[in-house]
Amino acid sequence: MIRWILMALFCGAAAHAGAASLEVTFDQSVQTASPGDTLTFTGLLKNPGPIGTAPLFPNADVLTVDLPLTGDDSLFVSFLLEIPFPTLGPGEQVSMDFFTADVPLGTPSGTYAGAFDVLGGESPDAMDLLGEALFSVRVVPEPGVLTLFALVAGLGLGREVTRKQPGAIAPAKRARRSQRPKRARAAAPARR
View 1 (cartoon, rainbow, N blue to C red):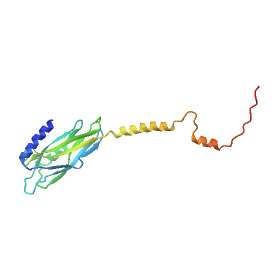
View 2: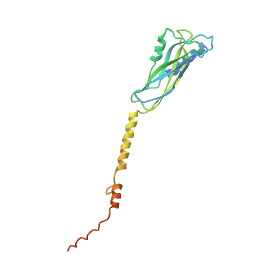
View 3: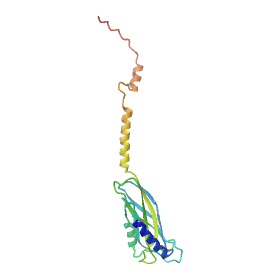
View 4: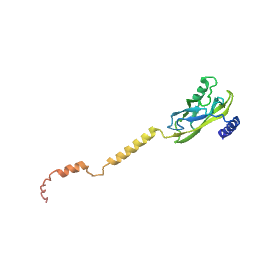
C-alpha cells in the first residue's frame, strides 16, 4: 500500500517536471532461481530526450520486491557515487548492473514481483521519478530436492520391478530347464 502511495507521489512529481525521463531496460526482466540463490539484474539506462534538451541526473533509486525476497541496490548506488553527479545527455545510455535479488532458503515456489525506480531530474538535487522497470523472479524447488525425490521414486520403482513372485522361476532358468533332455525316472518300488 505504501509503495503505491509513494508511486502516486513520484508520478505526480514526474508529470509536473515535464517530459524528462529515463528508459530503464533489463537484459532479463524475468529470472528463475532456487532458494539460496542471488540474482543480478543488468541492463540499460538511457536518456531518450531529443538533442537540445537538458542532461538528466539519476540521483537515487527505489527498489521494491515481494517478500520473502530481498533486494540490494548497492550496485546502482556505486554507479551514482563513481563520479560526482553522473549525468546522461540526450541519446546517451549506459550499460550497468542495477541490483541483486536474494532468494532466502525455504522460499516457497512461485513468482515474486518487483519494481526498480530511478529518481532524479535536471539538477543534482531533483528527486522526480525518471523511469521504472518491472521484474519478476520465478522460484523453483532446489535441484537437490528434485534429484532426491527422483532418486527415491526411482529406487522404489526399481525394487517393484525386480521383485519376484513366490515360487516363480526366473526367465533365464526356465529357458535352461526347457533345453535339457528329460531323464527317465525309475519307478520307486512299491511299499507294502
